[in-house]
Structure formats: structure tokens, C-alpha cells
Image (tube, rainbow, N blue to C red; front, side):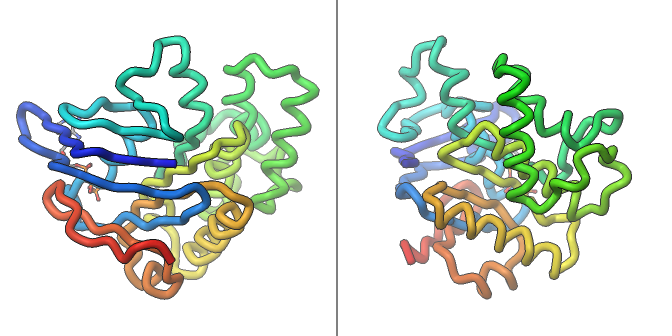
Length: 222
Ligand SMILES: Nc1ncnc2c1ncn2[C@@H]1O[C@H](COP(=O)(O)OP(=O)(O)OP(=O)(O)O)[C@@H](O)[C@H]1O
């Protein structure tokens, strides 16, 4: 599902944020991405989400080389890849429902279908009864689950999460990771950047380690 071939990403003022990354992740794998701050985790996720382009090498998603993707296929690619961030990035003056509906509204999905899919996504994250709430009326864990529902609502094949539990206590973090495991079991491919080493060990999924932009560890498929 995800393949990196000798990928480099260089920022002029910084040097190589990623250097010579070779990597393969199969459909339905749940993979943790670890490494110290600045190791290149976010950069790797951004290359998959097409928020950045590699300086050298190739990134392939589902057999398609992102470098040769025609412009008109880029929105389709972005729909295949859901992204979750640590800070939720929710709109504070919009309800939970509206926040989750946003990607579908941008896609021009029919309002009736939007209602159906938003409620299905909220149901998956256990927030169906909070659809009218504003984000600030929710706990940190609930806000993060709204962010997850928003990433799910477009039915992505790949889910990327950048420090999704960075602000949460260990119990809530565990809950979020268990939620991700449920997505894995229905065939979604997940790549999760995290500093949560205790949970990474406890859950025992494949774990990649970056150091100074290089892939220095891979526990392999489990
Ligand atoms: N847009 C950018 N312009 C310049 N340098 C950047 C940019 N984005 C990232 N970098 C640099 O690339 C390196 C890797 O950053 P990245 O954010 O990928 O690391 P990370 O492992 O996700 O770190 P953290 O755990 O702190 O989020 C860092 O040295 C960072 O300063």
C-alpha cells in the first residue's frame, strides 16, 4: 500500500530531514513510527499525504507513483489518505457534526449522504450523542475522537496520525490506539507517529524507528 524508494527530503536551511528511506507497508498493517523530536516523522507522513514532495526518490501509494500523478488525480489521492494531528485542528465555532462533515462538504457530497456518513463516523468513535456540542465543550480525548471521525468520514484506505495522543493521559491514549486497532481489522492501513513508547511496546505492532532522517529500526510485520 505504501512504498518508499530511496527517498530524500532536503530543506535548504536544514539539510536532509529524510535520507535514503526504503520502506514497504502492506494493506491492513498498523505501523508505529518512532524517533526523537526532529527525526523526520512528520516529514515522512507529509510525503504520503502529498503535503510535501521528496527531493529525490519515489513514494508509491497503492502502486501509483505520487510524482507522476496527474494534477486532476491529486484530490482523489487526498481522499484515500486520512490525516490526524495532535492538536485536532477543529473549528471552535462549529458543532461536532459540522467539523466532521467539512471534508464531505468540500467534496460536494449530497446533504442526505453527509448526514448518514457523519453519523456513521461519529458512531465508530463513540460520539454519536455529542453531535450538537461545540468542540470546547468536549474533553481532550473526545476532541481527538472528533478529529479521528473527520479523518474517517471520507473512507480513506490509509490513515496517518501525527502524535495523536500527545496531549492525552495514558488511559485515553490506550483507548485511541485500541480504536485504531479496530480500523486495522477492517483492512485499513495505519501509520502512527508517536512518542508513546510504553504503549508501542504494550501493543506490539510493527514499529519503525527514525534517527536523523534515516530508518534505523524496523521490527517487521507482525
Ligand atoms: N517546512 C520545513 N522547513 C524547514 N525545515 C523543516 C520543515 N519541516 C521540518 N523541518 C526540519 O526537518 C527535520 C525533521 O522534522 P519533522 O517535523 O519531520 O520531525 P519529527 O520527527 O516529526 O519531530 P517531532 O517529533 O518534534 O514532531 C527537523 O530538523 C525540522 O526542523
